Length: 231
Ligand SMILES: [Zn+2]
Image 1: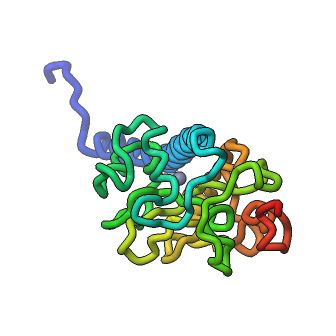
Image 2: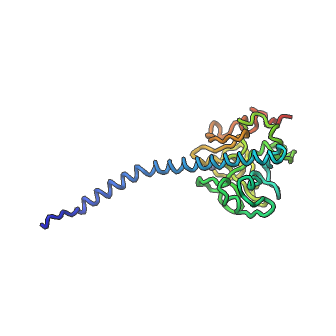
Image 3: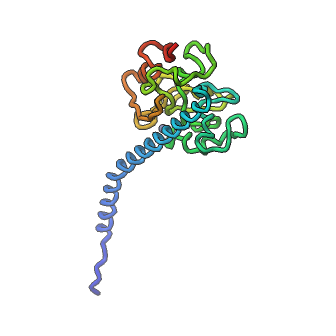
């Protein structure tokens, strides 16, 4: 014996096994931390979009953005210049521009990052452009006319596509949906969606009850889907 002691194979295997067990215990905690970080980033994106929307309405005599897409107006994409971009939708904009722009990209993993998507978020279809179900009013609405803005959903986790692609509205409906098709609010943060309300505060919202945001949050008043606006 030269006095040096070496690990036996069995000792080495035991050490490896212990490390593996500890790593296994740590991974779920790390994963949860990652999901929390995604949600916090997303909420910050929505706060920035809320601030941009305030500036936009100030510059546009109180008029809100279109929820419905057109060639020159499309949801929150028109807020690009207010978020620091030199590019404007309908002017010198390319398809990839918004997604390169952090406030338009939710960092949480989700399925709809295919071609045509320009934002991870959508705008409440019931507020601006059309009164949902009727599609009879294609003008953007004035923010001053909204009822209970602190309870009314404005922008939330969803998706916004370019015109010409299926489901290109960029608008949000009430139906909860786990990454299916349509313009539904996406609950992609561990069962929660992030929402910018129309007083421009941002907050997470749990999926509740029958998988719907409440009528109050979507339309501004319970059970009266045409009453978002004060007429
Ligand atoms: Zn998100």
